[in-house]
Image 1: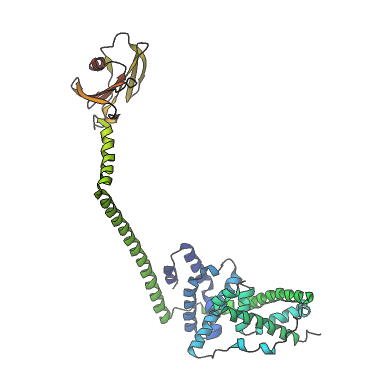
Image 2: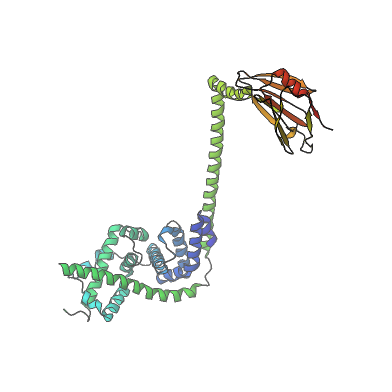
Length: 185
Length: 232
């Protein structure tokens, strides 16, 4: 399969990059896809399509930064897997952008709670518990340092949707913190 | 207000750190999970897709090569047609041929021999020396020798060199050239148009080429030239 990817590329540097990416992250990408599709063959197809897409955006990947690379690959593969499921009708497309915001408390963020170790761990747990809809955009924003327009391009969304998801993701986290035992007004 | 902004900034910093940590934890788990997929082989759909992608890439490269070849041919044709068209214009044609013939019209090349360098340059002596002249300077090398003679006010120079090494060009645009024979060898005498120029006599055979120049009269030059003898 690697031969195919290399044949597609003209540039020697890009070939070396895709070879390294394939050898280092192929199974990681499969595992990422498996989180959604639970079928190895489907996961393989999704990863294959993702790599073909990545070839056109190789500049977005810096192999010297493994965590950032993983974050980018993880989110894009998972996003492709979600799209696949939607197309297959196996999971109805949710529209989280139109809900949840009305339930969020607009008061200032409870930073004091987070300064303690326990508070910080709680914040990490809150992020873990967020739906992928918000987690993905937050990861691309904070780990990959992508702009909203770049996140939109990576996930096939509009920039406005990305912006809304970032804001709502943060509001949900703030709400969870306020409702926790760590928060005392 | 200031406090609110500070809180927001702090929250951003903590969020960045927490998102990274959350992801790092998840990745540790995912790295373990990925080990269980090392056995995977390409599916049929993948193979088909790979083959299509490969063919597409090969076709793209082939197309690029064809385009490049066609561009090269087009440039060649354009250049050829352009050249023909240019030459078909009388003034351009006249300029081109004029430049070519101009060069060969202005210069004469004398080439005495194509023989390889095996022939050794012999030693020559001068049987006749115009009155009052004596040897002023000599340079004797394996391939070339030069002798300068002077009578105190005027000088002349005789050079001889291996013919195979000698292609002599001289300007005949502003000079008159006579052809003659020196001891059976072809010779050219370049007569000066002005007093500032010197007379030049060139002659040679398969073995050696001579070059004689100076303020001597043409008659004297020919006499000097004819008196040169090879030493046995």
